[in-house]
Length: 291
Image (cartoon, rainbow, N blue to C red):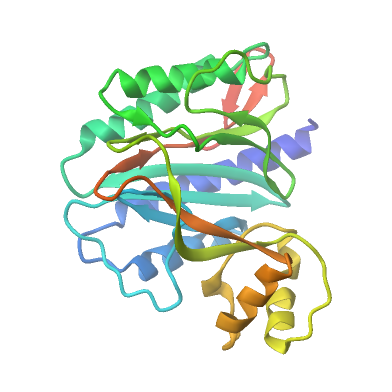
């Protein structure tokens, strides 16, 4: 990795870290989901950076892939466990980071995912395996009486690529990919009071373009025109201005032009916490870009 690319990763991480901390402090009981999400996303653009994906705002048993809808009326309530997952990029070099805000009495749950993240980071060095990171995550979470979510993982990052090797599990396994100097990836432990496994809901607010195909419907063409500069990175339905998007989006999904990201959720009534950092493997450990 050359110095220019390294600095872009670090710059994206610094912006993401700062804005995520500010956004977490803005969460209050009665605050609008939509106002919070749009405020955080606007700050990224004001800093001269770009969104690698729509701000994920997932509450309680919902672990990932939720965000405010265009006319969202939801507000934060007492007892909510709110996960904020922010992606920022500079010229496609991505910082992915997340934190959890507790509006109830769930500090031990939050500590489980936070301590798991720190334990995994301490394990990162050339020659370590992804399985060793997963074992560190699993130990920290289970030792506190919670379950790691086994079918959610950390992931490698590259220019305009949000998910690639290595996969970083949240449970231990025998081996996994061997870490090498220069690898860039996100570590994201999830701790839950539920089953430790997420399934898909029907709610879908986040999409990405996965192929280039001719389309006839004007509203569908307008959507593709809106997102053409995303380089395949995810976008939100909120970002679309087309009035007929409810018809156009299903058409683009059926033609495999777009991919949808359903909300991922543990069992109803459970609570999930998440913490995440992006790291670059160095000769003797790692640099955490989003600290």
